[in-house]
Length: 173
Image 1: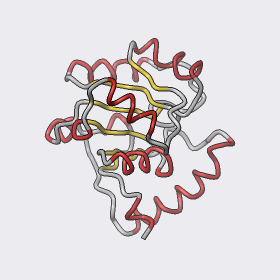
Image 2: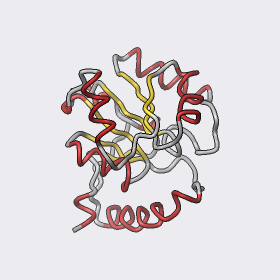
Image 3: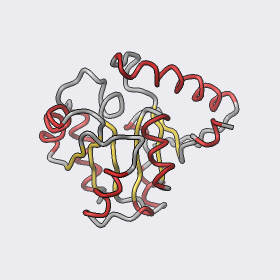
Image 4: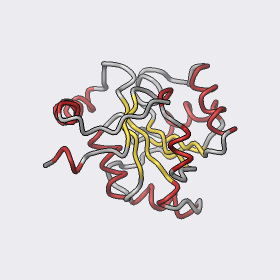
C-alpha cells in the first residue's frame, strides 16, 4: 500500500513538538529542516524570534541544523543567514543526489541524519530513498504556493489514510 511506503519514522504537530530525547536516543545529530511550511509559513521571508530561539536550543544540545529547500538560493539564503546555519537550496527533493553529496562533503552518516518536513511527496520520499530517519509535520499554515497545491492534495489524502489507520508514530516533545 502506498501509505506504508510513505510512512515517516515519526510524526509531530510542529517543529516545537519534536522530542529531542527521541532524536538523541536514536543517535541523530544532523537535522535537515525543510523551509516553507515546515520552519515557518511559506510567506515568511526571515525567521521569527521563536524559530531563532528554537534553532539556538537545538545547537546548544549538539544538533547540526541545515535548512533544506527546493526553493531558490535567494529565498533560502535570506532565511538561513539570520539563523547562522548552513543551507541547501535547489535541493531537488525527492531526488537524493544533491543531499547525498552534501552529506558526504560534511561527513554525515545515514545513521545520524534526519529529514524534517511537511510533505510526504518530497521530504519523506527523500528520506526513504536515502534510508534515513524522518519526521513529518503538520504544515505551518493552511495555504500553499500554487506549485505545491497538487502535491498537497495527494499528500492530504495519504496523510488522512495514515491517521485513520493509526499508522503514524507520534512524537510529543
